[in-house]
Image (cartoon, rainbow, N blue to C red):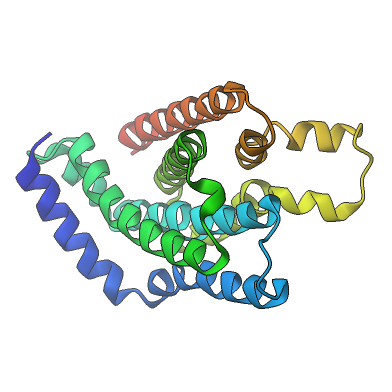
Amino acid sequence: MNIQRISAIFEKDIKDFMKNMMLLMMPVIPIILSLLYGRMSGGKELPIFVMYIIVGITYTSVTSSGMMTMMAEENEKKTLRGLIQSPASFLDIIVGKSLVTGLMTLISLVVSLIIVGFDPFLNVRALLGLILLFLYFLLLGIGIGLFSKSIAATSAYIMPVMLLFGFTPMIEFLGLDKNSIIIKVADTFPIMQAIEIHETNSWLPLGIIAVWVLGAALFMYVCFKKTMTDD
């Protein structure tokens, strides 16, 4: 990795981020949601699954959406291959762009958790879970962004990602039987495994989330290879 090239990509993308009103509004969404939940709770501590709804929305609306948009923009402008063929490596490009998304995600998540209370996350396993979740949603966003041919196309992907992976804890409101296949499948999803961290003393949920991260990394790699071979 080249620090100067990463810094140059970061500076360019942070300027582009600030000019894009849609991307600029995304970090505000979890903060507004936190204010609403905080007011509804009447000052009481929110249930863990509600706090992870906020986490899920932060990671989908800021992390995944941001990376989708930035990578899709490179695809749309036909500049991605040019970047890859430049002195900057693919890793330099990904790290540079991820720093922008990571910064916005951190600001949004920290502010949101300060509003609703961050005490449940003040332990090693919970923090590791948040880091692994960030990597999962980051890699997923990069992969979908590489797959998308235009910025407009990303809008067709962000909602399924948000509903499946961001709003997973809301399955509690559907009133489904605990033994139903839908509940059993949903319980293996990353956010649900992060909730499991708080309910057990096991490290197994972190291992399952790590498997999801590896799957997202493989998906990103396949999409990258496809992008490089497409005419």
